[in-house]
Image 1 (cartoon, one colour):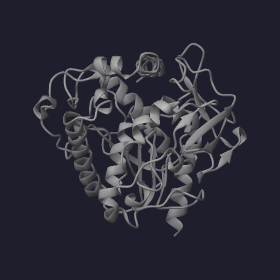
Image 2 (image 1 turned 180 degrees about the vertical axis):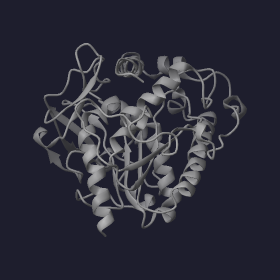
Image 3 (image 1 turned 90 degrees about the horizontal axis):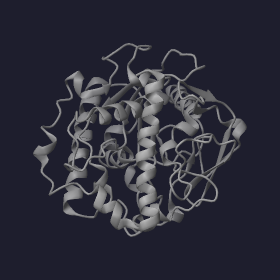
Length: 371
């Protein structure tokens, strides 16, 4: 995908999310539920048959698909960044929601050209942050439609369950193709929800192999979720076998839309969830509950004024963990469209810290290999 198409795709997907956010903020949940709820009841067959992950066409990225430096989306690099020899880790990445239609509860593996473009966009702009650490596997999966996250219905739960079933099957194939070496897990939004469940169910298989898990853009309760995941939060920059998680907000932050319903749910171990317990690991420093100045941020992914290219701008955005949120500061780019209501920079969770994530993953692989 050329740089211009890449940035136009960023604009489109962000515009969709911003429009949904403002509808909820101004008119309450009813209008958003009406517009986003999939038609009819959940029918698994509407999403097509389950993928065979032994076939390369069911992966968006896979080390066997294309060598480093080609047009394979996970191998993309922003302008001004030189390509280093990749590390020897194995990276499994789960993309966020890219299906916004309401005709079914789960997206087919290949649906509309817009969905395909958005999916490749996120692999390109998020999974690429790990291409210095090693080979990247990014599966296609029958993702739950956007509306499944707005309802507490049996249809919604079944849609999420079907999507996770695909992720779980893809992980089985990943383990077959990468039977040895360190593993990095990474995801965003819907992908992060699935990654939480994957960690909880596969922690035994990951013991001794997990370098780090980047569970980004979804709240993790340190009291009611983290113990069930089997791995601790990252407390030092060189720590292995640990979890990083953050949700980016500007100041003043208003996370009410995010936590209103989440705090009414129970965690993976059955305990109550509270915002005060949400895990925050600063992606600039790689340390839990830490603050880091803009000078320490390796680089923020920023498009040029004409939206024809993207480059890495170092030392622009700082961040500090506060009450479960990652509060950003400094010379924050004037992203277009702007953040979601409440100063929520959800769409830019990776872009704000792309360079630091790139460095963090490589550093943890190096440290893990020395143990």
